[in-house]
Image 1: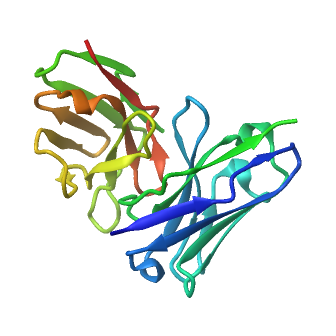
Image 2 (image 1 turned 180 degrees about the vertical axis):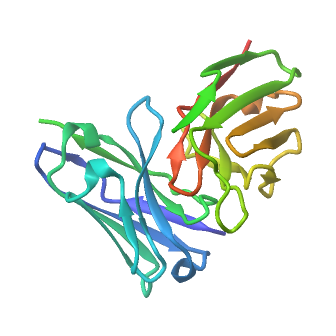
Image 3 (image 1 turned 90 degrees about the vertical axis):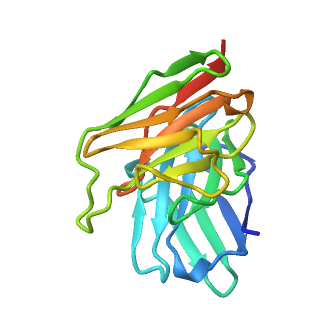
Length: 114
Length: 108
């Protein structure tokens, strides 16, 4: 069974930092692109970042460039999202998603508020 | 930009439903495939992929769900709506991962 388990979401003040993690099992993690997608409260889905299987290609949505860093550890079957200089508008549930969007985690809630 | 319509879809149980998704650019990739996906998000759940590459149904997805279309215009159809189909449906172009606004399906 494929499982993606996100962790690290929390309440943080504007300007603060968080690191999200996603532990993947039952899936050939090292063979696939991985992605972060977020969903703001009562809002739609927004792609945030993608990373190639070996980390050699990385892409971000414009609104997080220079503030967020996606990374992966294939030895640990884990995906990460380092989030710095957080803004109120970054408040959302963050999902870890496989390359073909065929598997999604349960999401972790990031709340940016003073 | 991915544009869905309608944004709200009240349907009587057992009746068909149809959701449209229009892309501002062709979704035909240089490899010949068209990367258009459909997702279902039930209340309180993560999104679930229903359809990939326009019309291929994922494992476990009931055959009352079907996808069609080409180029820039795509459609998700539900032949007979059941209570478990309530939720929000999203299309997504898989080249740059852009989602539609979502269509909320509810039972009349």
